[in-house]
Image 1 (cartoon, helix red, strand yellow):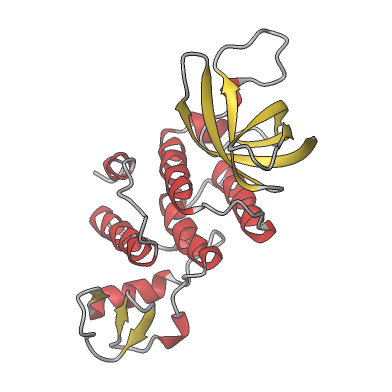
Image 2 (cartoon, rainbow, N blue to C red; image 1 turned 60 degrees about the vertical axis):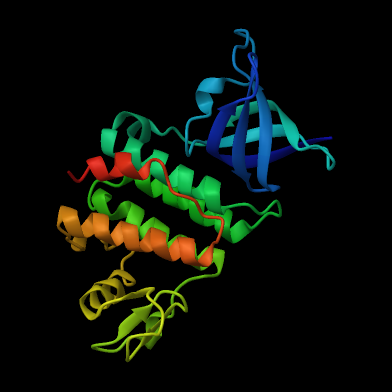
Length: 241
């Protein structure tokens, strides 16, 4: 049975000499995997060149409930991502964020709110000109909301510590080691107010920005036990060196 859906490319790996597996987050099916030929004729309706990280596609697909790998019959881009693929900074951000999404978005049930957030965020990354250095901070923090592990920002008070294990600000050092000191907690509380609209107003040193990302990834790892080391993080760090 053929269905139409929009999908966001998360990752691709070789399957054999002829095919690649494309992992996507789709509007109609949640996370899904598709088998795509590496080399296709000129008349093909599926071009592998479309499947770059964070590409947003309109597709006609064949889904069978008992099949792990599905087929794409036709596809086209929803909107061109010229800056995302040509701008070195945005390209590295796309690689980093697509790897994070590949690791955390596992649900095979559709989630319209999550898809809408991803769709609009990718558009924002493509067209933003100011505050791009903070884009991934906003994205990573807002994604926590859709994963159901967003911190309790209302619990913050001056001088409190952020308990990373429980996702709340508290007035004393917790009995475990997963917490932010007072200075870090103040920065984190401020960071929870960041958005795509105001991200250009937030300034951080290169050292502080890398440290912030490390702490956010640590928070992911604490609340998502299968969250691994993000390989593209080292590439991202090089942007701030």
